[in-house]
Length: 454
Image (tube, rainbow, N blue to C red):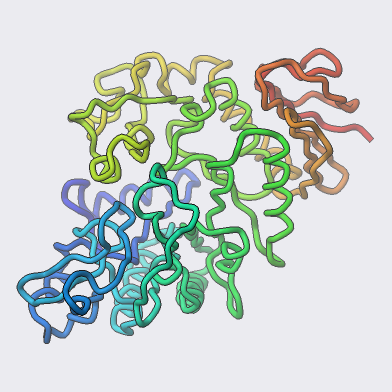
């Protein structure tokens, strides 16, 4: 937790990276994984060595159920039991994910203090914040009761969703832990905590804090699996804005390492519209690598599959490897990503779909993202202004971003057909097509930003 795997370099390399980022006005967040360690971590090696080892309670060990078998019915997120039998000590240990990733026991004060020391280590080193992995998993119900069956389960969802994770995740005590994380970060001044939390909206909002502040940004994944129509998106945006607690800053995620890239889900034309949506909504956007190039579906040959989800539950579409392929920088060997053999294959059109090629093309996806980011920095209405949804159809999403006397209108055609849209008089700022459309119409797959007059 306080080092760098030699596969990736050294702490000195990390310090040079951090310094180089800061010299360019960038901030750097690290991925903090508090729920589980590796089964090769010294803490777990000790915990596993004997029942009376001082670190035995740093992980979650239990006797078999009466009559044998796992202590309860919990299912790993990768399928199969969440318990692994250890022959040497005659007990099972808990792993919410792979058996090589034993869960830590956050009810043990020594574990809590050791992990807070990990946070201090990186903040002392100058890291600007942490993305906290599976935060809602960290605390389990104290007596580890069974999870209830999921009445809406469908086999294509994967084995883990056979049960509702009501006892194995999102326990009330997690908010005390999140508040501890926040208090520690606040002691270092300008530090950011982003929490990975996949929960319904009302429960997600609690991670901003209850009696005390929680994480600054509980990840908002609603757009990732949303139906791509204006009425659905209008409802999601309105409900999310209404649910935010006082002072809660919004954030939006539209793709990630666990879900398809935007162009793979929507196609390249609508991926341009999605870029405009992501970068003009109120709040902090999270952009996933490769989306700014429009990387679409990537075929992973069977012999090159790496993702445990696909390996353990093959053929039902759970594999995440297509979203985890390397970033393509140029047309040199391995797309300039590495001098070695990449872990996963590149997208098939990488010789032309890469950063170098798209930087040279003002109509490229990358150029669109850069134009949107440039406009977002220049317009307070986009960076800190309010948002107001307008009436629209199932195909056209319209909203305003306002700040002081500045009002911007964003109109997004979510269909592949031309759509009538009453656009106000104003200055054209940006279109996903690069030019203003005919008066009163949005072209197929077009997003548009206008500065409203008066």
